Amino acid sequence: MLNWRAWLKRLDVFLFLLSPLAILCVVVAVIVLADRYATHRGDVLAFEREGAPVSAAVFRIEPEDGLVIVAYPEGGETRYGLMYTHYYPQALTVLNEGQRLTVRALPAGQGDRVVWEERFGQFAGYWGYATAPLGMLVCAWAVVILHPEFLYLGYADFNPGKL
Image (cartoon, rainbow, N blue to C red; front, side):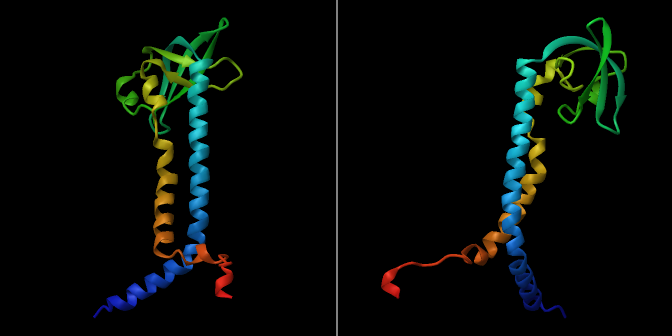
């Protein structure tokens, strides 16, 4: 017969021992989340400020990589841009090779990424970068809430009335 109390006690001890690591995980998750938000926001602002709408043709679709490669003219030569489909999952079913579309491209020397102009709102409002750090944050936070003892490790009560 399974002894639930013994298993719950073991789980409690495990979470207690895990709580110092969970405190660090909360801090790391917040830093990673802030970094990913700043990176995405910087990309959105770069495409808004410096990106120019340009007519392009779908050169190749690579569904296993979640990538659409487009070709567009710039400065008299053909330039290739990478359009990631995790911003717009329907792109793999809607687009075909050779199809024309409008993309927003950054000037040469600022990378090969392009954004689908007609779906720029989906790119700007994308929150998929936050799923992993938020999952880590929630799990670590739950452990810290269950066992906050290590948060008070360095706490000293300087109340002179208790001396």
